[in-house]
Figure 1: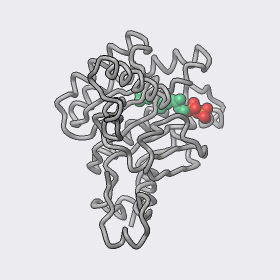
Figure 2 (figure 1 turned 45 degrees about the vertical axis):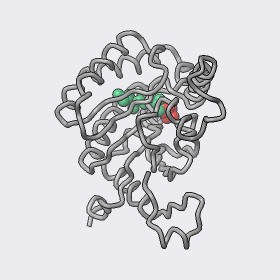
Figure 3 (figure 1 turned 30 degrees about the vertical axis):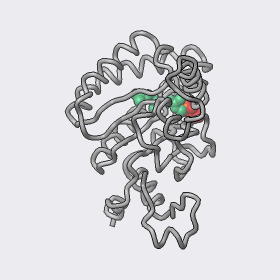
Length: 253
Ligand code: FPP
């Protein structure tokens, strides 16, 4: 029986978040330029988006470019932005056809104008889709997001729209870039690094973390199914005891 057949369709995470790491190392191992690794990474993006859509996963967040990635050599940053623009331009129709709805989180205004334009077009084109929500984290970092939320809350407090004593988990969540999405239940990081790297720090509070040595360009559907099988073996306790969980069905939100 292959991994897909073993995946229990009734116990899938609603939201998967992925740190797509290892493009550079994958390319280097083949004597190629880092950018070649990013190009192959796009093939994995396509396959994982399709894999999630086929399984009926509702949300997939991909960490495509972090705030810190701006510090990479200029040529690599330019190549990544160009790849992003070309990929979105090429794939938008396919996303639309496959009922995938695209979203972006991150400091949108810091992206090159051409990138913003292509992204906005793809977001508009797919806005009516009801299948997988594909969330691209671009120029994103969790600390940026939380500071941005704090600024907006402070402004609303000053203008009288928000009472500081009323701030709770629900209200705080509304000020985050991810306000419209449930928290991920599963976070995958490829390429053998055991870090969260400023990714969804607030939202991953109760996520199951899955780390694999596989570099992102080699992370395809079979590797996704392996991650899901691993997730399905975990007991999600949300701070409760194992006994409490066994008498109450754990939530998947
Ligand atoms: C990490 O590998 C990967 C990135 C910084 C970029 C990820 C981008 C893509 C997969 C392509 C564009 C995505 C979309 C959604 C069109 P790394 O370069 O840090 O690898 P290394 O750790 O081996 O150096």
